[in-house]
Image (cartoon, rainbow, N blue to C red; front, side):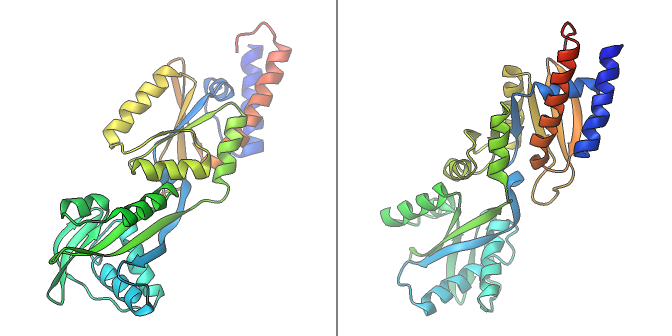
Length: 297
């Protein structure tokens, strides 16, 4: 009875300090023993729309040529829905370039094939270039890989007939302020952050380096993510799975806590609130344990 009363009181104090409601006493104890948080999308760390950080025309770097390749690339993404593709259109508008909608032949998630002024162009990632048998060359591949190791997404523009590469674009999401600090705080609290993402391994590693996330599972489908989550929680029952937070729906997030088969859901504004929540809970649980040394907590 005394233990439950003290835990109920602690839940009230935690809400007062953090503004976050912990629904049950089991959730409270689970948070105090948390060992890992599984983050099922890199979008958790991004803010706003991606931007074109750098781009190069393969033939030369004159202003006219760079404007021309940006015009062509942006004209190829009028119907592309992926935010990385749309960043090219935004970059063209920012540069005052008036684009036209190409006559599209193929539109894929990360690329397109279309005609502009009787010339067929291919826009897309490295996979798209390989499918169309566009040679990138060692120098361009090295540059693209370096972009990706810095956490950037790489797109290419090529002419289809005759096949020749025209330009390379490095696009990047801005990180939410303080993301790296949150990961560091969690590590200091004994919590390992594990990132699951569908992006290429090099890009995921680049993001991980920027954030100091040590364990990353990349190039996963949604079904594969579910399997990895199940495996991680089985290996380490004191786990939390962050759900519902991405660049389109940042509030609220659900943190599903699982310890020894018990699960509960806590709603937090963002991942940034987790360290403060854990500190508040750990202090309270520590005090209860000191007052009730023989109670099982």
